[in-house]
Every structure is written in structure tokens, then in C-alpha cells.
Length: 141
Length: 433
Image (cartoon, chains in turn blue, cyan):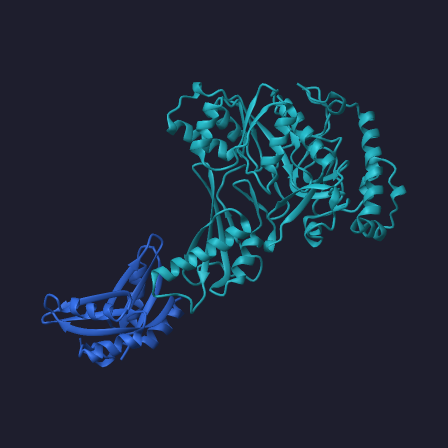
């Protein structure tokens, strides 16, 4: 159960992130999760959005460099040590995490991870009864 | 001091005679030893006997850098390899450099030319030269090196880079002269200030600057900051290397070593010879070269010539500063760079769109080259490290072709100008006019 993550290459210019969000808004696309990775010269916006195909199409039309990647989303109890338990599990199985981002609200925490081996990561999480999020789940968050 | 007055101060008649004699011999040689020239002369219906004096030079065919590339590596050499004792090479497009070969006599003429040049700067055997041109395939380092030795001066073979050490050794060894690009001289001046060694602790008095165009303003700045007399040296590897022309104490044009290299100015459009004083493309015929003799080699450098006798006493023809190029070659940190070299690297990479922009600037007196490229759809990654790896890959490939490093800037799709005609691919922010 993978989720399609959208990433957008942006040069470090004022207002550039906002241009992406405006275009998504104009097309009634909602963002569920969002993170920005950056270095000195450019940034990469990573998002989980309500309609990936449409988002890719309109962002390409607006001349952005975009990419779609499979990521894994899961939910946890929002308590100390919950994430650590999962990460222990993954590292024991030699799953390397390229990057991750997370947010928590109320009793649950949601995590997006980009592992090197997506399928194995899902298997491991499923075996250990971690609650994976589907696209349908996400749209309700 | 004039190193070789017999050759540097010839009367017009003597020079005409000498140049005519040497040209006849040269044409005879290339006709018989270089199939390339024999064919070119045959196409023009010329026999060696048709060249009677230097005035007949206009009948001869031109040679271009492309001819050197087409005959890579040794096709234009006029002697067997057993007589070639040195090779140099300059960077070329699509990874193919221009190779030049020297016989023992060529090298000895080259050293003598540079001894003439250094004498004209007022140097002698008491001078200690730090040579900061790169040693290697580039002609700058080794050319100057043997010239200083021929003069009888002391040479410190510093080569380029490691500015702190350059300064330390110039100080400790009591260098009285140094050779570098003019922009590196300014960089050294600043670094000296930072190093905190007062100017009086240095013995420097002469600067030998070339390998890139510079201006009177830069000369003033270098002279003020370093307290030296700064002189221009000009050359190109195809003809010999540095020392093809040099200034004298008058600093009023660069004296061409015209007993060895016959200069002409032509219109780059019509290829017709232009009279002295008019600006056009500089063309050289190597009157005495054995290894790689060239007829009417088009330098693509734009300047004018002056045949009047100089106040220094020399009668050699003088050339003005280079005011530009008749092609799109850029000189970055003293290295010749053609935009087509960069283009060839970009076109080979499947990750990149075939659009690019070169931005050249001078920051702290050092030339900086930025290459802006667009990543092709499908190669934008979600990972920073992948994008950084791509940048490194481009930088590495460019370095292997250009021999200088470039900053790579990845830009968003469609940032580059798309045009049906000739797109603006170069922005040169350096102010050298």
C-alpha cells in the first residue's frame, strides 16, 4: 500500500513555493502532507496531494520540474517511543530511510517515509501490524 | 636592453630580405613535407616558385584551428617524430585538443624569443622569476621557464595555484619578477595584503602578464598595488606559445618577433589583407618553425598593427591590445574556452535539456564560470542528494573537457531562452573594455 508523493524542484527564489500552492489551490487540489528539503541553491518540495495525476499535469504546464515517487505512510499512537519502535524494526531489517516527515495531532501521529526498498518496508510494517495509510485514509485526515 | 639588436632593429630592407628568404624556404618545405599544404597550394594553382618575396604571402592559403583538429594529432607536422622533442596541447572542442610539436631548434628559438621579451622589460641575469603559469601541456609555464634560463635569470618553477605558498616563496627567495595572468596578479596583490607582509619586504619589480586580455586600468591597478612595472606578453600555442609578441619599456604596443613570425591583419569577413593601422583579425605565418610550420594561421584575435619604429629602437612591427575575437572563444582564468565545448558535454548527458547559459564574472579578481542547465523531465528527483550528485557529475565532465572548474546551477524547466535563431548563450559580466 504505497502512496504517490509529488516532488517539485524549485530554485531558491522568493515566492516560488507560494506559486506551487496557488496553482494547486486553483485546481482544487488539497495537500495532506508537505515538507521542504533545501540546500544552498535549490529546494525540493515534497507533498502528498489529493489528486496526483492532475497536480503533475498542471504543474508541468506551469513549467515546474516534477517527479512522482512511491512512499510509505503509516499512523502511530502519539506517545513517546512509538516512532522509535518502528524505526528499530526497520533498521534491524536493513531498511534505509532516504528521508521522512511527520506530523501529529490529538492521539495519532502520521509519518511519511521514503525507504530504499518500498515493498520490503511495507511487508515489515504489515507483519508488525503497523497501521498503513491508504489514499482513502489520507483524504480523511 | 635589446637582447638581439641584429634581429630586433633591422632596417626595412634587411627585414624584407630576411622575411622573403625565410618565406621561400618555408613554402618549399611545407609543399614537400606536408601533404595538407601541398594539396591546398595545388587547389590554388600555386607552386613553391610562385612565392618570390614576402609580398607574395597574400597568395598563400590560410590555416585555421579546425585544420589542426582535422589533422589531429600529427597530420600537419613537417618533420618525422624522431625530430620532435616536445609536445604541447591546448584544450579543444569535443575533447580533441590541438597538438603542437617542437624540434630542438624550435625550442631554442622560443627560448631566445622570451629572452628578447624579458630584456625588453628591463630584466637580466640578476633577476629571479617566479613563474606562476601552469606547467604542463599549456605552453605558458615551460615557455617562460626556458626563456628565463636562456636570459640567464633564475627561475622558480612555481606553476599555478597555492597562492599562500607563491607569496611566501616570492618573499623568501627574493623574487624580482613574476609571470602570471593579469587577473591572478591582482589576486596575489590582495592575498599579499591579507598575509600581512609589507610590500617593502618584497623585491618584486617586473610583472610578465599574458594568457588573457587585460586593460590599461588593470595595468595601473596592478602597478599601484604591487609597486612593479607590468608588461604584456602575447602568444598562442599554435604559433609557438608566449613570447610571439611583448611590450618594451615604452608600453606602446607589443613588439612582434617578426623575423620568426610574419604578421598580417585581415578582414574576418572578406579575408582580404588590411593596411597597417586598421583593425582586423591577426594572422601569423611561422617563418622559421620546423615542427609545425603554419601558413597564414588565423588567430581570431582582433587588433591592429603598427610598423613605425618604436622609441625603444626596435623596428619590429607592434600589435595593439587584443580588442576582441572574431569567434566566440572565451578566455577564463587564462584558459581558452569555446561555448561549443560546454555544449557538447551538455548534449551528451541524457539528464539535461540542450539549453544552457554561461555566466562569466570576475569575483575578487578571479574569473568565475557558472553554467546554468535545465534538468530534463523525468530526471528531477525527490532527493537532494541525487540532484547534488547530478551537479557533481556535470561539473566533473566539464572539468575534464575544459580543464577549469565551473559552478553548475540547476535551474527550473524553461528558464533558458528558446529561440529559433541564435540564442544568447553567454553572459560575460567582466568589464575588460
